[in-house]
Image (cartoon, one colour):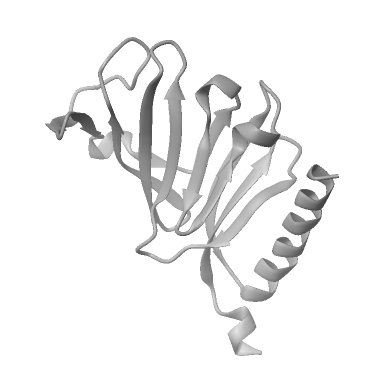
Length: 159
């Protein structure tokens, strides 16, 4: 019974109605990757997030070119160009998030990856729908209950 109550890190992705899209266990070595294509310039980009407590830490954002609408640099941010990719590293003041929020757009081809789990949000969500991503440490028994609810949501989406 102690095994079921031991806190473990999880990442949960929900739609705006609170339905689970993805619920997965994350190790301290996993990063959350948010992949998207910038709609006006069609530039592939990937934002990388780590975990600290119940917060996400924005580690870096990589993209193929720099143009309008792509991540702005603010004072304290740093960047490098490596193998023809721009990499922005947010400053300490600009990198902690309690949750991540995205608005779905088919043109942006938004994808969330955690470890070996991948969800192509743009394939089954409608334009303008909102997604909320959170991370937290919780017990295995609560995780299993939520995992069941996630399976029920996916079952409804494929009917």
